[in-house]
Length: 194
Image 1: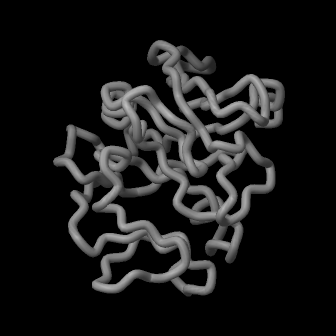
Image 2: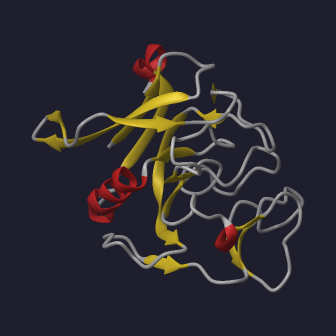
């Protein structure tokens, strides 16, 4: 399990902590890592186009992605190429999914292969997608990832969780699909909800 916590709903600074279940208790699996979240902090009601990070408990998507070669992850890995998009068009039947297409799916869809250095490597957080919901809900938000800082000093995101490159690679390599990892996103004061 990964816990991304922050001191309040409005801060953009967070901490990522990894835990592993040993018998009936959760044990720390890494040091506490500095992270950044959405430029408007956390939200219990995230919507498309608002730079908040959605609170809740999510899975890690079945495929990890990146502009660079696989750093050694245990998940299936897709190296991004020209034409790899994340569909962020709420009117599309393929909203909030990975697509390979010669044309932009519309809306605020991201050209994943162009997002350097943020998408050097990333994991998908399954907000507004299976298994958290049967089908993405239009306008409820899309493209929530665990990715690299966009600047060397670290910066707030459009809703994703970001880490320094080396920290990100360590976390992505640690995650094991056989253990069905989950990620919890929440201000510390609300963690007991999960």
